[in-house]
Amino acid sequence: MTLENKLNITDSAELANVEEKITKTKALEIFKNGILDNLEAGTFESLSKIHEYLFSEIYDFAGKIRDVNIAKGNFRFAPVMYLKASLEHIDKMPQKTFDEIIDKYVEMNIAHPFREGNGRSTRLWLDLILKKELGKVVDWSSVDKEDYLLAMERSPVKTVEIKVLLKEALTDKINDREVYMKGIDASYHYEGYNLYKTEELS
Image 1 (tube, rainbow, N blue to C red):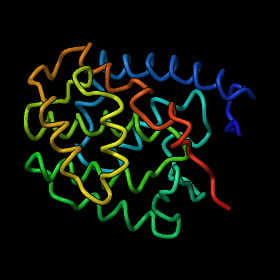
Image 2 (tube, helix red, strand yellow):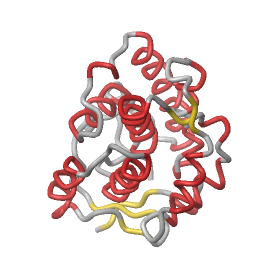
Image 3 (cartoon, one colour):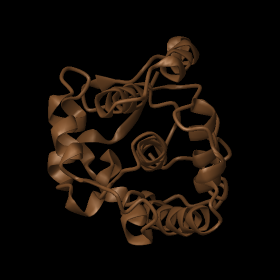
Image 4 (tube, rainbow, N blue to C red):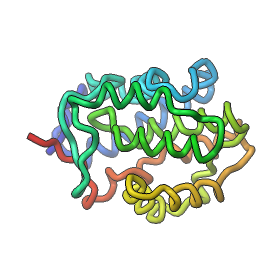
């Protein structure tokens, strides 16, 4: 199934390729223009603005809370009827320590507020929190992609794996363009793995 998009692309592989090119270009604009520096770290509003900036040329729903229930593999993300309350709860979660920040990141992944593009926008959102609270960001080039995907898959049950993985990858290169851009790599998200492909639930 190919998501309806502004580019009228009907082939899912083509859409994925175009989507990655556009979002990487937009992510670079975000970096160059210092847009993240003007956002409040750790709020859904800031995540929504990041998502809208990345995906507004591709999807009408960019920055908007999804109105369908979705799942990946056997895992169902937060039901639409509870999504708004879940996001309000996440906004209030503490974010002063590394553990608190990753707990918040995991909860936002469980919420999966958008129809598509959650991984890329939420990784930028995570780095924004880490940068403002701890003066660190994740060097995604030192995070094994398969280890990350498996740790995120298991994170709703236990967060220790993802915490160890990301803590070991922290760097103080908070203004390094290459470090920043690695976080937008689509291959770190489930979309590249058929096993975890997002499915709309009826």
